[in-house]
Image (cartoon, rainbow, N blue to C red; front, side):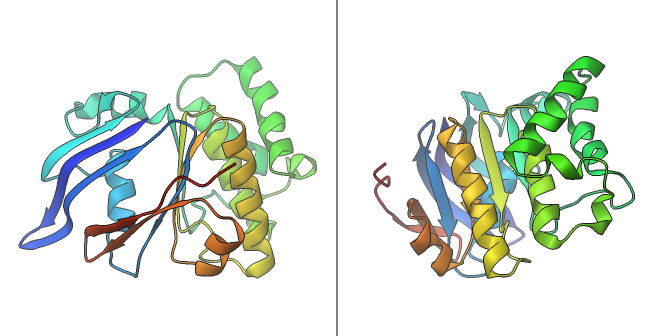
Amino acid sequence: MIRLYHVVKSYGEHDALHDVSLTIDKGEFVYVTGPSGAGKSTLLKLLYGAERPTSGKLLVGGVDVAAIPQHRLPQLRRNVGIVFQDFKLLPRRTVGANVALALEVVGAPAEQIRRRVPAVLNIVGLKEREDSLAGELSGGEQQRVAIARAIVNDPAVLFADEPTGNLDGGMAVEVMEILQAINLRGTTVLVATHDQGLMDRFPHRRVRFVGGRLVQTSARARA
């Protein structure tokens, strides 16, 4: 599913990532962990095409993300979902409208939108809040809306960058349970986090970065 070969990402003289080679198989749930500034977010940005590597090769679903032309990036992103720490919702639009936006931008027909939006809201436990304004929800509910938006296109892989960073303990657990459930449906999930407690509570394979270098990778967690 994901292959990195000797990837380097430099900003001037500073290497945010240095000579990273990594394999993540289809259907895995993987934590990308390490201290602040270790390169976790940079790795995810490279994988979904928000930034380009300085050198090396990245394959996501067989597509070389490093070489794909700029005009083809939207096509790539139809096959990936992205969840951010700060939700990135439109607070004055309804929950349903926020989720539908991900389908509208790829030209999905109206009937598909009407069918898919309540279905994914049901997955994240928010079907009854479809007509609520996103800005009126709690932080945990907003993150669940963000997850629904990320999976409404049925992506092969889901990237979550510190998805529980702005949430309290109980809400963070709820979000992790939803991400696990999505993974069990067959989606490959990568979660960038430094929350040791959550990683211990929801054990999965870990890849650890320090100073832009991949320093440790654990075995795939047993089912």
